[in-house]
Length: 265
Length: 177
Image (cartoon, rainbow over all chains, first blue to last red; front, side, top):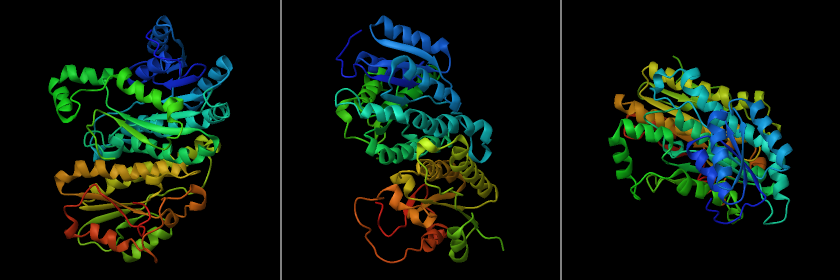
């Protein structure tokens, strides 16, 4: 592993949806910088290989099967983490499911809304509820030894709406509002709460590119930096900033990490 | 005649009495559950009451408005969705989700000449206690006096607003900018 520093040494981080894509990239980057990472994946088949790969690269990671559509599973993940490692400093809630193209007028709530509502709205609140005491405890540690961080992965569509998946946007918008609200509520506890709105080469996007090369060209053409983000180097690095001490005076914010494609904030 | 305003509470009642429309229109006041509560105290039942059920109502009312042939649709929300508010995480999530859903609806329904917009009002209009939320803005409100959003909503329900869609007009006397 290319250990670029140990800025998160001693910290313990849960990354939901870390079995692939953006969550995996974030988990890898946090581990590279010394964090013990809980790869919270719905299926061990995806989460365990990521954790094993991090360990083989010299990092510290363990997979905990976590279904963020179930509050009790989130609670169990937090409980397991604290029991195993004695602390929880960072939660990155990235897991998300249910984005199916649809027409709003024909949307069936249990098909086109429920999954996104559970993973974005419900789980963002439930992760916060379960993690708060531990994140607050982290913030009571001396500077440089802790600092509670809650990071939500949202989307530019959560700001500008979506013509293809209209119910995706409100689910992602909710996360920005939750971040702002918790930034206010948890500020006195010293916990920061922020969002990242990424566009990255996740497995689903790569599959879409394979099926439709014109889509990749279109995204690259509209992006000032001319490329799609890398899950670790581009997105993971922003998460590292928000998870670490360098961002200790940043809270309630959304960092759009998409190569400059969306400039609406 | 059936009112174009759907929703309960004082705000909805006031709008029912004052808002006018020049064409088939619908004004949706989301059924926000206004109860300050720290996130650590939220039960799953609370999340259902404060997030899931109000959002399902907003989505269903938008669908109903579209199905009824409305050409102007306005959703009224508190600015707490944009500002966030301590002890109102679930409520602010619902408000902001409803506000951004307007943009998605506008993007899809523009092709059939339906406009969809949001009007954001001061949190107090929905009964939200800004002594708890924290300040909505770092600056004082620009305008003094009582704010009535009904004329702004009536404009959005008029023919003159035919090229305005997916927007949020903040109608709070210039507090949130």
